[in-house]
Amino acid sequence: MDTPTFERARLRVARELVGLSQKQLATRVGLTPAAISQFESGAARPSPETVAALSAVLTVPAGFFAQPVTQTHEGFFRSLRRTAVADRRRARAIAHVAHDLALAAAAADRFPAYDVPRIPSSGLEASLDEIENIAAHVRARWGVPPGPITDVVKLLEAHGVVVIRLPLNSTDVDAFSLPFADHPVVVLGSDKNDRARSRFDGTHELAHLVMHGEQIWGIKEVESQAHRFAAAFLLPADEIRDQLPTTVDWPRLFELKRYWQVSLAALLMRARTLNRMSESTYLTAVKAASARGWRRLEPVPLGPPEHPNNLLNFLASTASQPARAYLPTNIVNDIAAATVSA
Image (cartoon, rainbow, N blue to C red; front, side):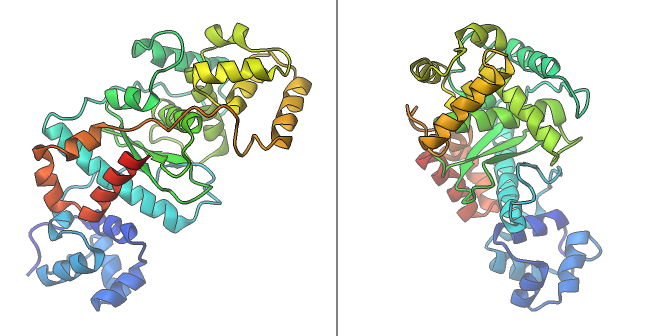
C-alpha cells in the first residue's frame, strides 16, 4: 500500500545530505536505480516499507518525506566550475533543512518577516552608478545609519533572511544563497574565521537576493555585480570617497580597515573604483600586499566572524520540538554546532 504522502523532492534532499548517488542508494536499500529515479521524479511512490528502509539508510525520520518542499534554483555559488558537484549539492541540501527550521520558527512567531526589496539590475551590463544607487536604496529603506554596519549578519536576520554557518571545507565555496521567496537562506563558511571576508560574503549574497532573485545566476557578470553591490553597501561612496588615500598609505588603510570592518583588499578596490587611486597606484599596492603575504593573511585582525542567532534561539526553545521530530537530528545539530563555534 502506498504511503498517504510522499514528497518526491525530499528524497533527493535526503540523498544529497549523505552524498549518495541514485545508484548507491538503490544498492543500499535493495532496489534498482530506476526505482529511485522514479521516486524522485514522481513517476512512482514508495511503499511504507520502502520509506522505512530509505529512512534508515539516509538517517532521516520517516516523517521527513511527508513534509512539503519549497522549490528554488540550485543556488548562487561562486566558482561553479571548480566547486565539486557533490559538495555543492550537500551544502544546498543543508540549506533546505535550515529553511525548514525557519518556516517552523516563523509559524511559531519566532522569526522576523521577510523584508528584502527586489530591485532587479537592468541587465548583465548594468553600470556601476546603477548598482551604487541600488545599494544606497536598500540602506535607506532599512534605515541603516551612516558609517560602518555594526553587524551584517544581525542586519540580514532582522529582515527575515536565514543565515547559517557551515564548515564548507572547500576553498572554492566561500558562501552561497538560496533565494526562497519566503525566507532566503544565506550560508557562510565557518572554516575561514575571517570577519572582514564574512561580512563581505554576507553582503554579496544580499546583492543576489536584491538584484537577481531566481532570474539569473551562475554567471561571471552576476558575481561581479554582487561584488560591486557589497562594496557599495559596506562602503557608501559619499562617505568613504574622501577618506580613502590617493597613495599607498598603509597606516591610513589599517585605520580604515578597523573603522569600516572590511578587508584591505576591499578598501584598495574601492579606492580604485571611486578613482581615488590611479590604476598604477592600485597595482603597486596589490603587488606590495601580495609580496608581504597579505593576500593570504592580512594584518590588523578584526576578531571572529559575526554570529547568526535567530535559528539558534529557536532551536533552544520548546517551540522547535515539532520540527525536530521530522528533521534529521544530525543536520540540525551540525547547523547549531557550526553557529556556536564560528
